[in-house]
Amino acid sequence: MFIATLLTSPERPALERTTVESLRNAWGGGDAVWLEPGVAAEFALPALPENRWDVWESLQGLGVDLVVQPAEGRRKTLLLADMDSTMIQQECIDELADEAGVGAYVAGITARAMNGELDFEAALRERVGLLKGLPEDTIERVYRDRITFMPGGKALVATMKAQGGYAALVSGGFTAFTGRVAAALGFDENRANTLHATDGKLTGTVAEPILGKAAKLQALEEISARLGIDVAQAMAVGDGANDLAMLNRAGAGVALHAKPSVAAQCDIRINHGDLTALLFIQGYRREEFAA
Image (cartoon, rainbow, N blue to C red; front, side, top):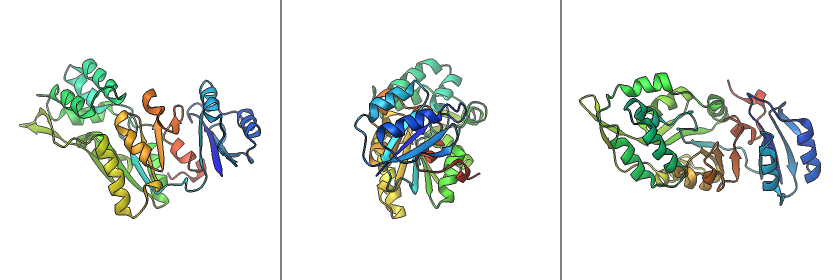
């Protein structure tokens, strides 16, 4: 048995009943269940539709995401999340680089690295090198003035934890930011890279080994083992090429507003919904979300 979930942005509800019923009828699905009117609905399916990606593509123009997944085990007990452009709406290194006067150049490198065009570790070293001499207290100012949370993040973490889940923030960014973001959103732990500083200024270097693609996969496997669960019980979310190993290994790997080359390698692609989409695809109704 499979579940088809249709959803859209809660800020711009665009899911029409006719859209849901038309697809349900075409696929011979069960009764539609509305998880939030205008935002998310689901129905059961006896088999995986052969044309699901064609339908997915046709719904993109309507601002609607479509996820089809096995019904069994879709509620997860572990959340593993990327930070930059996933739990927050910015790339922290780009914001720091802007303060250092090299914002556009670094943003270009970041975009290429997240798209898988550059080696992540080498690209990170190059970008961090350009931050040399930046006052360390710039980090606090950037976090305070420039960083905003992705909508739905607090509800996602709080709801999964309320159901006995565990949440880990695993980032290729920096501990100076993940510590703050994890505390604000309620994560149980966080892992990231450490920027070096001396006499109150960044040295342009980062602690080795760098937390990259392999380390994110390792975090998934280590945390799952520590909790005594299979990785099939984990949901991972991210947007960049360095997230792919983690996304493809987890029971549910969600490409959230991801780079096209990344989304193309994932079965769960959220282009229009926010982080509450990760609750809807687990079958949570809006009224079940934790405050």
